[in-house]
Image 1 (cartoon, rainbow, N blue to C red):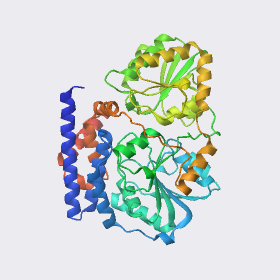
Image 2: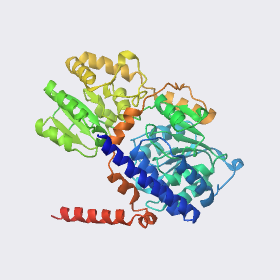
Image 3: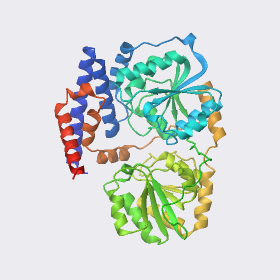
Length: 492
């Protein structure tokens, strides 16, 4: 990307950030708190997509100012239920992410879990259904869509209903309703945040007492770049959840006599200026004619389709799979996405005994697996990664042995439960955090390349942002026009 394009992007993003700041500030002064929350949420989501820094104290202070006005804590510290823990899930996934691990572990530790999630998740979490059966888990659903004030009020009412002593925040980086409510219970409830998005901007640094990090990299960013006190940071490595009742659903092709190379995640993670990821896939297919390539995930598949034309019947694109672990067990090795790799996908591959070949130009992939040097799976450039891929393809015994060593590096379920118990009950972790210096510049530059100015309109003009439409009429109008044109095209 040229400096001219980068400068233009920065100028436009800064313009909209300043407008959103001003709207939030003026709305607070006029006591129009819904408008203020919409502006804060939009600005935070824009900064998450932009990802050129890790915190925004101005937004944090706006939110702190609002939260004490729009609601008050519904009970005092001496009224808390010591064995009740509220788990606020802002994602609403089933096995994707970390929710299942935490909820299952909290139940194993003897807590009554009040699980709070959007109503959109109803009947969409079959794995949680199985875990919750005959367990001390209560579900509460928040209506969606609704304005931020109403959502915050609903969440606060759930606090009032159950009086939890502890609460866990597991949210999107711009969930202003959840952050506002959690922020209000300082000194009353022990509040924990699961730092899932440790590599990117997020809002809410004042909404928790302890931040659970899954690796050293995220802990360093939290301490150095977000300004969070070291005493608040506790480490708990990832342990992927495996539903052992699921069976392998098979491949969409005949795999006998072939080596299936698997990759997956949001396709946005595969784009960079040099088309690095797709050049690696092409090299794999040219190097070994026995390879079939399978990708699971959503997004722009234009590059995949281009490769499909070059290699007919050798590349397959499918939706995400519930039997992800079982699928991993049946592939030859896993190719991580680039320039953004998925931490959980890497974990699942290792747990299944498959090598997750990963390119990491900086430190952003560090610590996803805690492995010895002989188990190296991360490489600094495409050439190094391709050399490893060729070794794996040429030597099945090498691939199997290395995969087994990686499998042994994953903490077991009991280790995870015991460590979480220490964190929740004693505020200590058996895992030490190393605060080594990290390099983030190359990773941030990659976000700058990927950022689309179309994100500005998307994060501002949403169905739930009624107040902001008055401030951005042209953005709203252009979106309506574009939607109308898209509808006409679909009709032929």
